[in-house]
Length: 340
Image (cartoon, rainbow, N blue to C red; front, side, top):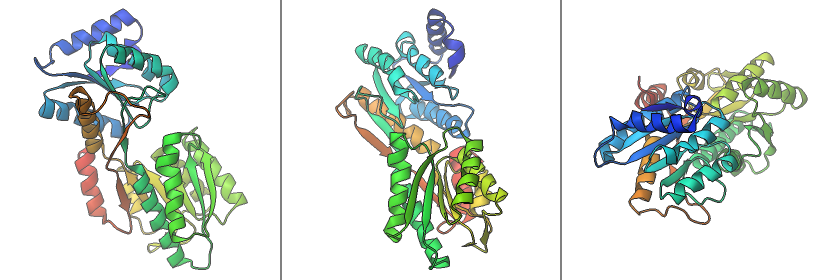
């Protein structure tokens, strides 16, 4: 079942009535009822993750999952937290952008002995368990692969790297920015790192950042675009400058890495003449299953409901690479994760 946050929060009483009534017909007699938050249900990753969570929880645990759509709006996500207690849930797996604002609602749920976990980011000092994708190992590997490919093609051109993303976001920094740089430096300790540039305003911002940066620093040759929407802007900026080019699988101008590998990126990654060559594959199936297993482990007493600091549990992410994977294998991965 899916819940639209903006409609629910119009009235607290109406919202709680809607949630409880909507779930009554599908609630398993002896099953648990889990609120499952996604940040944006219009995103194909979250669509697939939500569907996988509903099926997995029912098949493995006899539990009902109610999906809450945050609609890419931190206020809606926070308001959705207030529905956990009102909706009579046994547990909630959250995906929140504004942790401070969500904290009172989380504490209210914990006070009612509702099991609560978070996805991607810990929620302030609540101490609730956090499920994360193992992004760091993939970011490291992508950086190492890119550095090796550049050095092989241009042994006399020093590596200059940059990241486009969210420099002040703790989990993006620990999962993407820092390990990517470490991966590059593991191959070339002399590589120059320009650091992470704030691209939080999205695709158009990323495009302009790339145009401005490479106009001033044309020697930049390794670029980590830390989300697929940013990569669209990154590649457009490179194209505007006459860059973004490989020749028969060899880099001419730079190499680009991305996150959120999807059906759009596959053609670029495996195009021997495009500089986008690696992307982090975040799997909705394993992510959903990990989140459901974690919340059920809390309910079953296998994982403490809170700790200090909050415990983090990591689930598999994938390196989708021009150099280590065939396009057919990548297509099979996409079909398995997102349906083909």
